Amino acid sequence: MRTGVPVIAIFDIGKTNKKFLLFDREYNVVYETSTVLDISLDEDGEPCENLPALTSWMKQTLDDALFDQRFHIRALNFSAYGASFVHLDKRGYPVTDLYSYLKKYPESLLHTFYEKYGTKETIATETASPPLGMLNAGLQLYWLKYHKPGIFKKIKHSLHLPQYCSYLFTNKAFTEMTSLGCHSTLWNFYKKDYHSWARQEDLVKLFPSISSTYTRMDIPLGKYKFCAGIGIHDDSAALLPYSITVGEPFMLLSTGTWNVTFNPYNDDPLTSAELSKDCLAYMSANGRPVKASRLFLGYEYAYFEKKMATYFNKNKHYHQTVKFDKNLVQQLIFQNNSRKKFFPQPMEATNSSSFRKHRAVDLSLFSSYEEAYHQLNIDLVVLQAMSLEAIMGSIPIKKIYITGGFCENEIFIQLLASRFPEIEVYTASMSEASALGAALLLHDCWNNLKPIQTLFKFTHFAPQKDIAILQYEIL
Image 1 (cartoon, rainbow, N blue to C red):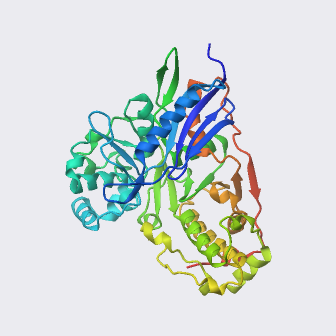
Image 2: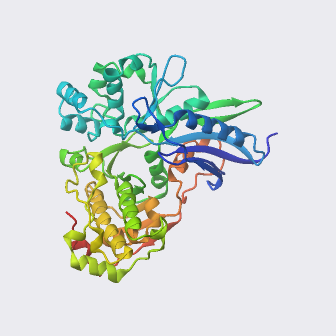
Image 3: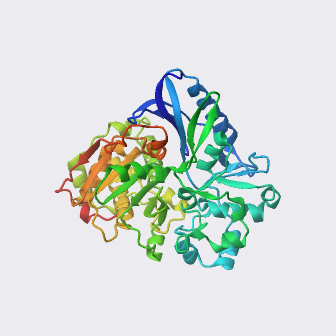
């Protein structure tokens, strides 16, 4: 008889951090380990995911956990970042590197694609995918077909990264909707089918049959077996616990390198105006479209914070010591000095048409790191507010929940709450929402406790009503 605490194992594969977590039946994290893998180079000499290292780490990590007598693994699932394919040959081995979604897409090939299949606006509207080059996963296959035909001919199956993670342990290939429906340019949201361009290019044959996100299978392990899932896109996974927990209209702001806002209460078709603001549609675990907006804000923040630390001779953790200074905020907003404003700079690389005014800031205009840091957060909050407002919809939103890295930034959160005084703004104590979402998908195949309705502890941030950030604009 196997002893140890019954747990579900989750691989949560982020662009930077790769995590492995064990949840008990009450969804407490009872074990966690993580790694940051060295970046590899693809055949073009550009940075990419180190796929062999990732594969090796995942297999070794699960082996170690399976033989840890403290735990009894009953189920296994995966969440992973999107816009990434692993292409397998007929033997089931990867044919290519795991290309970075930041790899530059050839303009001439894009021109050919849109000339043949429709305008950028038409394709984007039908597929709920802003034109983003390699971030449109389907266009990665189009690029391979015409720029690397020798490699392309070797491909038997193309698996989204979450499904490749599952394939490593189940040896079964699946296509799953949260990955397929996430700015892939492959799925026609109106016809609820692959887009005609993918069929005309004969790409659909490379995708295994579409399966429910809730699909599971029994995996034998000696005398025992456990239940394995087929994986889920990490952003869709992060939304799932909130959908279970929150009973009134809400928006979720998932922060990190990308800040992605989800509005499960806005399922209106995307408009061209929304697309121009980097809005898109994700797919929920239940297969329903979820309107969302994206902003490269974490990257923007890190870019400027590093510049400030260097200029003011501060260590890389100094920003964590800076406290919210209401008087300083009021002073900066009152000044409204355009020369001090942090206009988007690295965000330009994402091809977002939302913010066309890019300019480097002159840090000599600030008297201290603290002043510059407060100004940075004021300007980032205004950009974030524009992104949230773009998908508000007609149903009044009661609450905004914020998860991820920006939850540690008190200044940002306090200012955002002040920007939306009529909406309750909360941060969530659970930082592993995507892993938890992946775990909840398999609840009924291993956990005999009733599903928990209160999975989070929330911290409420009341607006500072005498801060005039509602009238402050960056652009």
